[in-house]
Amino acid sequence: MLELQGLLTQKNIKVLVTGNRGYIGSVFTELLLQKGHEVIGYDAGFYDANALADLPKPNRQITKDIRDASAEDFANIEAVVHLAALSNDPLGDLAPNLTEEINFTATVQLAKLASVAGIKRFIYSSTTSIYGIANTQTELDEDSEKKPITVYAKAKWGAEQALQKMGTESFTVVCLRPSTVFGASPSMRCDIVLNNLVGWAYTTGSIEIKSDGTPWRPMVHVRDLSQAFIAALEAPQGLVAGEAFNVGRPDGNFTVRQLAEAAARAVPGSKLYFAQHQALDSRTYRLNFKKILTVLKDYYQPQWDIDRGARELVDFFKKVNFTEEQFHGRVCNRLAHIKFLMENGQLDENLYHTNEAS
Ligand SMILES: NC(=O)c1ccc[n+]([C@@H]2O[C@H](COP(=O)([O-])OP(=O)(O)OC[C@H]3O[C@@H](n4cnc5c(N)ncnc54)[C@H](O)[C@@H]3O)[C@@H](O)[C@H]2O)c1
Image 1 (tube, rainbow, N blue to C red):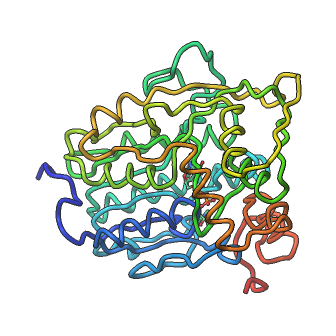
Image 2: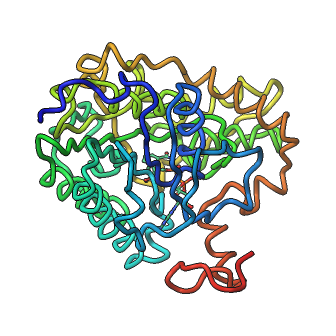
């Protein structure tokens, strides 16, 4: 039967959230719980030891690798929001075959299991990195050419294409393409641009930009993104089935200079330095967010601009007594922490927990 209404218009639906203990997942889980829904978390717990504040407790937690997912994991579930992944380019470069295995193969397998189990909606967290390097004169929309460059971006784009082919009238697939995320989370990341800049300003009192600050970055706050995932669950099937949405806000494209200035404003007295040369990192692109802001306007209204987000980060850092040592260490850096777990024998070369893992 055609699933006409959005799922979350029903009370208390059961949502399996993969990656629920990560940066986005922990904020999204809290929001789902606040709205009265039942959350079944599914996460291998790679970063658990680094949580800077309490992670929200889902109604049930599956602690397992998504590569080992089985039919039982989907019993009595109505929707899946799939966030678990090796979540950036440096991790992708550390272990290209594992990025392919986790971000592509396991993702497609997860969707197959979900579909067979009769799950109604499968929401996938893709990325705007799938567009690759672009001409910044135009804003990229969802139909713009995809030129994924990194292993991470290629796996994400491959997964999106495979997932969209699996959609049917009874299995709704929706892909969200989040801009670079910012904002506070108990499972903090400072390896993403605005969080990193505010981290520099807060812990050292200065921000040094290794370029002239001209590259463009599309940005979205972690709470607005969480609301976008809820929108993908709430909206009627006809608005979202088989669709992909860039996720951001109306003024969602910023230069690195603008981001650095916002970070400096949030930490009064902090100093800001720019190099005169152009960026070594060639990424620069601007996105168009018209589709999500019009099609899902009744469900998604972003609330967080970069200044509000930067101030929230400072308040959070104060609350958790965040230190310069933590900032430079592995606490909020995904690549550094995974390397540490491997070097200390807690993860094996295939990123499976060993007996050494506590
Ligand atoms: N943070 C961003 O700026 C951003 C932007 C665009 C897209 N995304 C995507 O959103 C999703 C979540 O990102 P995030 O920033 O929260 O990442 P994160 O690294 O903080 O969280 C990922 C979570 O997935 C879990 N995980 C990873 N591999 C797993 C596996 N094989 N089995 C089970 N669990 C596993 C980790 O333990 C972690 O809790 C990812 O898919 C990422 O690619 C993030």
